[in-house]
Length: 223
Image (cartoon, rainbow, N blue to C red; front, side, top):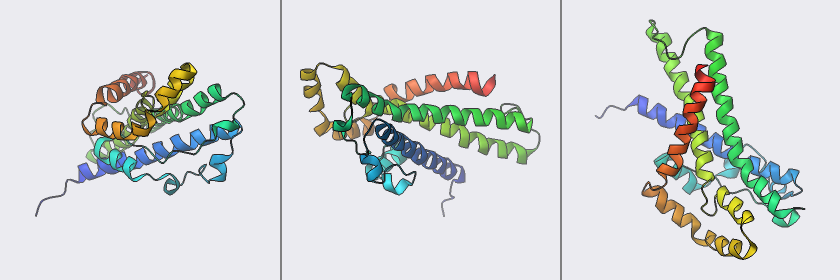
């Protein structure tokens, strides 16, 4: 009988758990920003909830498990409710990625002050195997939360419809070009799935995420 790799199972569990949290907060942030700008659609649809079931998207969860890049069911937004559509669409689009950046900073700050409170340097050698194992688990969980949120932020900022970055681009383009660009949204999900499957997005997602993570590690975790 093949032995189960408990370390692998734990790691995948942490990735999925933090991934779901990151995705849900991301979508709820879109909804709250839209609500603050005068659109009640997400609130009326019950999408301002942190309940993962309300945001569940099978393909997005599968992508999270397979490629560590995922998404949730988009929060409904009525753009006609905005007083300044171009500005407000950009604000709603950026609310999601910025919420993930905020979560990454929060998780990094938690581990910094937890280790300071415990009087333990996370990167030092610990003589007690039990304490060392516990610190590794905490490190895996919190650092995983930081990295997953940075990955999700970078992924959603890509200028590929229907990702958030594409909405920002559309609002910055002249109207004619914006309409042409918007037509890509019909095929956008299939394009993204193909790019994720063949790992073509990795340099544009994991590269920037790793760059930001290293700076967070230096300024928050180490200093």
